Image (cartoon, rainbow, N blue to C red; front, side):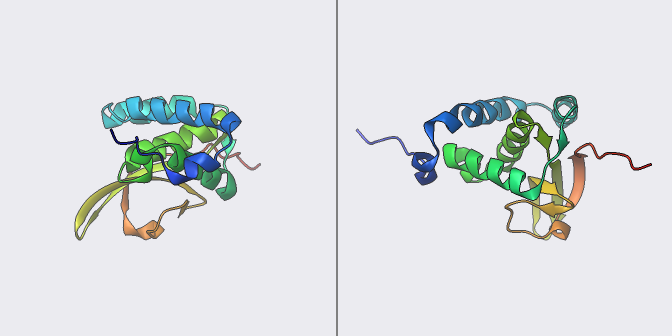
Length: 142
């Protein structure tokens, strides 16, 4: 019988840091099954009270999510981006959560970004036309 596939970085993630990451990835898997407008509604409610995430905070969350989930490490961009946002929220911050499309060739994608730049993504910010976002709450300047 073969051994289950464990992401290589999983063993580098301390045991005390795994439970919230596993919770975020499990919740993200459920949220990702919802219709797009419901995903946006759920994430909008969850971001309340959070401060804007820094690039470092969002990248650390993304790396932790990828370390514990083979699905998120692969082509599961929707679950990965939602899990990253949820893990950030557990830490009191929120990145901008985005989905978008490109036409040549057609492809849909979901990601998180900070200050208009995708976090941990190989594509440029302009590669996809944003279709839906749940931005971090920015403080109004007076």
